[in-house]
Length: 319
Length: 217
Image (cartoon, rainbow over all chains, first blue to last red; front, side, top):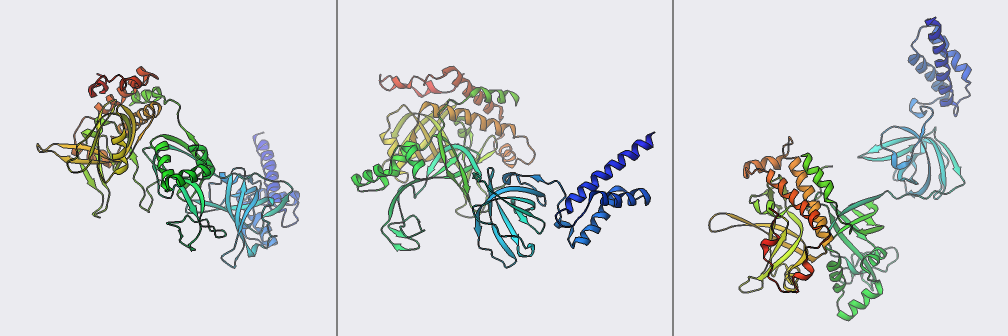
């Protein structure tokens, strides 16, 4: 009785294995589940080969048939992963993402390199010449089956490969921007804040120092408003950059008003002085994407709600 | 995450006045002349910069040849002393213009000096002093209590080198800082939205002594 149950279990196990193998190879060679199952049965039942080893052996024979390397086939039934959730090296996954940026490949072996984005964020991707894949277009959305994750110094990316399936979708994705949220007291507003002038040269936008652009020399600058600040929570320091709109909202000083203030005082620094007085020493929550060591503020909220001493008192009693 | 390779800005520690004033030992972590000087906090942390919020209760120009402003800034546990002169023009200007009492937020560097009798006084050389509201002050008290308790909680952790250093240099029972953190928190619950009645204190001219704002018994 027991043996019979075991035999049935083995049989249905073999069918499952066979189906998985057939699925793995379906893109490359013409395989039927029944044929795979037969091969597995022969090894397992007749030659007493353990199932794992039998599976391996059958896979190898199909790999040979298709002229593929083992790492070129997926493990079958990949998970669809959001790009911001990629946190492990060498995982076979499927992603649905928009090509948000294409860069100039730096090596001849690379066909395409750029950024893929979905609602969760962005990740780098690479396609190699040897994989011979159709070209991805910037701005288009694709379902990419069977890509493999890669890690370099803590940054994750995905590699397309010969087995990757590419299906262009007729839809758009709102790409998330990996926003972070930081909190703390604003302990400094750095130089280069307040009413500033930027280089007007096409695509430059560098901030002028004494009317000079480090790239284009003396130029007639264009006024802008921004704050480069330091948020400090007593444990860590975050540098934040507030662009014109966020700065205007937070300070209530518009660019026009700032220019008028500077004109009246014959001095642009009156603007940053007023901002320092208004903002320094109070607490803020800032969210936005991280760029290098800066957080680019999309939103700034002044923390005015009364702090809750009760929670900390409970903590004190636990020590 | 460990600290970055690039020299990064020193964090502004949160510490109550009583603990800050108990600190006396300073050190550097490299032989470089420009290496930052740290004040060792008794609860086991290094501080090259501090941020605190309190009530400015007095200010005096104690300079001889040029302006040199001293401010007394009081938190629920004690008094911070700040000194600002010609090299801190903004902070000195703020102290000159301010009418105590007022809630102020201070970012600054700890400074120590040895008195004639050999004891060490600790003060703050401000980078900035700004007037803030009562909610900001209350928030700082809660935050500083939490940071202080975090340090106390980690004091006996293996590998806490600043705690080891504090044991060697101070040999102070750190329990006292837990008690003062707790009473600072309790003082918030008692006042509960009442902004210490500071709105009227300056106006009626009643001499408000510093001791009134000292820690609860």
